[in-house]
Image: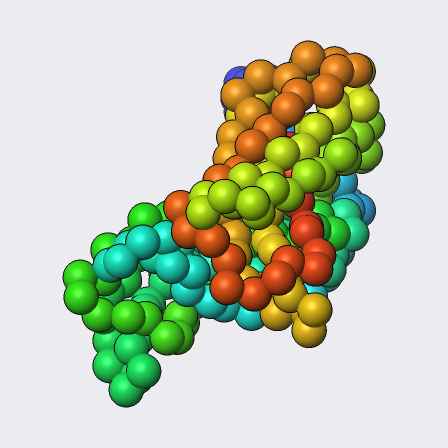
Length: 258
């Protein structure tokens, strides 16, 4: 083999080698990426495809379904009702940042009256009285409420720091002397954080444990280590004595910044 041929082979070999080096540096990062929660694969610490483990999203099989304990319409005044669905999330470390729902109201003949849709969040290990206020029913009286979620829940693993958001309700006093009952209570922010837009729902029960009234209010701002008075009112006197009061504060931990 003469020198011209050798030189040509060396030249071609050098070009091929350079091309292989360039291809290696281009392909290596793509072939050796770290597992992510959006690569469409079950890898790393994930319990499923892009869920569980170190991912924010929880896998659907890690979550127990939400339980709708009861639904009921509550009269506000003639032709105006509140609809309530009492929902329980038994999952300790996962919740739902947003989910759409629907109420349907029916009369005593089970004839449809009206509907109302809304959207809410569901925290972990929580009981949630979802309340839609002021539903107009005209001259018809609702006797039954059907409640459904309109979409599959997106389960999210909860930041463990949310356990520091300690709140409570105390000193509940129900005044039934007048024709407009009034409930007073103290909402206590026992955490080290200032809180905003804390929703409080209340359900009143009779001696048999049946809900006879419900309402909700909003604490727009609550300073750390302080108590805020809250009030609930009803336009008509209760026909059944109230035996138990349940006030449930709700903090949107999915929208909270530590």
